[in-house]
Image (tube, rainbow, N blue to C red; front, top):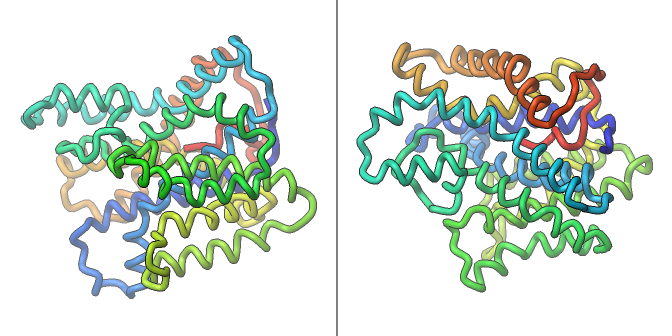
Length: 341
């Protein structure tokens, strides 16, 4: 499997996970007057980090598996690797919220619990239970994982720029043929396809330009659109506008970003999946034991718990399910296959 020094792609996951957490901490009813408008709008836009994760997932899978020929053994290893990547920590999140699920008296709870366990909640629209709301995105990831072997075989010879154009219009095209907004895996398929295109762009640009020529302007323009979305023309939604900027951001970071290449930043990035999927379960317990915990203390607690979970649970479980032996690696070295959320 291809391994490459792309530390910034790992480290940026921490930034994205933290952005999601801050979004959830502000709440839908947070008073915008307490913060300057740009800061408030950027924090409230934290849900948009999830679509960046989807682009990153496509980038990572294309880089890891895009060039190989598929057979039954490789498909088996691929499936085991994808399961090992997301389900152990997700199962831990279900264990953490289990007491609250048991106490929940919402009608039809068994069906919602089945949707959670099978990672189907992203297909069902809004659920009346909030046991672990960020988990809807894992429904999308499972769908992308299932589609990827066939998709990459079909798209291998497609020009990355042409594929990026397709990704920009795909969601709108799906809406035109009757796809509903509640079917999140289909709605966000365009982000995953954009990630595949971004991986191809990276391979063409590698060694030819410095990454800051892409990640600085794309990040700045993306922030501006999130803060002032009213500048977008009618008919162009924010998610679609951000999709190519997400691709440019990730390509630029892959080309090199020294500020995100420190070993501590990479380690935080590796623990970001645990941050993302455990922060709501941790919040359930915080509200029970210390309902007025300061936000800074809560965020610090989530980071520390997630770092420990990565070190002592996620990484060992991943190795065990893959059947891999422990190995030593530079803190700055990542495998493409471990960089997705």
